[in-house]
Image (cartoon, rainbow, N blue to C red):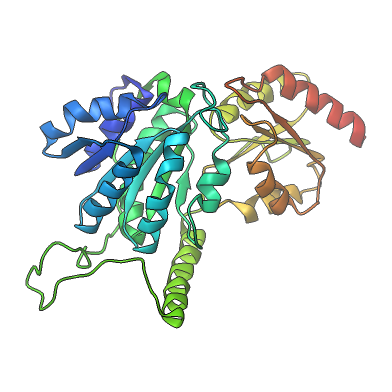
Length: 356
């Protein structure tokens, strides 16, 4: 297939349209504003509905309504905008409604900066809303992956009747890269016979809710959700290992920092230091077992977690997975400042001195 040059945010919108997105509800916020802008022009041409809502809160509740009617619904925003959507996201999860949510992360906390960041990891993987719920979180590291993941996210959402988040930093949304429009893996999706779209030949109308006032009924509902999340952990976990088969030092990173780490690996190996990269692709479910197994290898001497945040958030999952098998260090910056190749190289040199 011929490659085409696309800007990340515009490619996100086009990917959603090609995936059969019926409805988009959103609100402009840097650095993702090109997503609703592109959707406003091109989604109606494809037969879909675009609404620029009056707020992020309104947008996520519009997603709830459209998803409840059986539509493929999507919203996008950036960091503080996603914060405003958290109540709606937990309602979607509680009512078991499929939806796709795009977060082009910027630096925080609060309004922070319009520069890229990765400080929304906890919010995405732990759930910023109330209750025991999970969303599948896909973390692309380039525009091609972003396009593929956005298209696949709709199928994952429909399969599990659950929100799916594509979490990319603002740099991926703003950069331009060549991509291929290629088919994504097809899934055997169940019919949406649960949708609240009229009787449709049924004796009764469907009712969708996330409220269960009886304690035992609410616990039974949570038990069903927990079983579904366990299935996601079994079937949807993804990761990538690069040059890990003999690595002495291991870098863990996702998104843009994982791309930067590739250059560090090349430089380190050129000077005789065996370095590898472990890249989680699903941040939830996190590839805990895979990282635990890798960290247990004798040739791994030290681990460096690299993120675009000050104290580290994925760092917690790395530590939980490694379970103290190897020493773990952290490298991070905030405010749109990127971890550098030189910093990773210097850490690797010092780490090997300490363990030898």
